[in-house]
Length: 339
Image 1 (cartoon, one colour):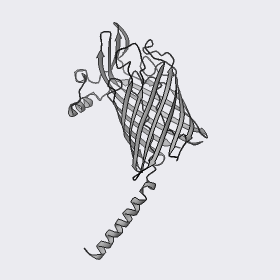
Image 2 (cartoon, rainbow, N blue to C red; image 1 turned 90 degrees about the horizontal axis):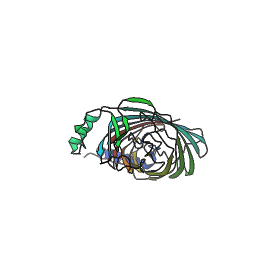
Image 3 (cartoon, helix red, strand yellow; image 1 turned 30 degrees about the vertical axis):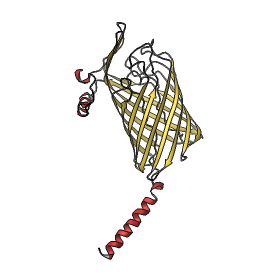
Image 4 (cartoon, one colour; image 1 turned 120 degrees about the horizontal axis):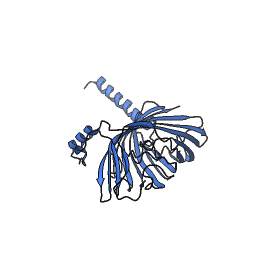
């Protein structure tokens, strides 16, 4: 090996070591925030179950907007001596989630959803996926493909039936937040958030619940610098109260607890990997079916692509940890812009 070649290698190692030695300070641009998603079951997404949001509120005069897509495929066919339920269909929920820093430590926002209920197009793909990895079909492969039929019968009485495709405005939510401690550019933060959901969507088409829902929750986060990038732990817990709605009104509960726990790691400035669990207590009572009267946990895995400090894209896939209480699979996308 010649002297010139050795010198080039040594110089290259010095430069490389210098870059990696300063790596942690260069990798903080990919902000790690919770996924803006929740249970997309056709009988749950109609309520005001909130996306928990960030622990750090916006600075005064700053705005933040997300365009969110949740594509959910549902199939469950269950029964007992008194009840039967069939949830077979696909829902697409498009949401505009906008927030504004009103003044120091205060934030306001609005969520405007648009809901589509249909037979969809994912049944064949999901059946093939289950076959490939040896997962049980749960009767999915015996049912008509791309069908829309949500039906619930109790004691011989049909209490719910939706079989016609529809699209329309969902239930709008008005949001607010107060910074309890910490904030932007600080390693730890906590915020108290609230949401009021209005009955603006059609309950007969499962675009809304017909109820007024008020939520209050605390969300916190802690960030650590690590050898490569940074690591963030985040979580939330809260309570939601609901007036009487129009969907299974005699069985609807008026109080639901909910929470979230997640972790994210950003190894380089343009990407972050995230895992998040969302959970809640049951929304319905007087039923022996898990689809109605059981707590639920969903797991979302994916990450964030940071195109710049002001523009990013969340991509995630949600699975039902507690089976039959949420959709088999949900594909989540959220494009975020800061202004």
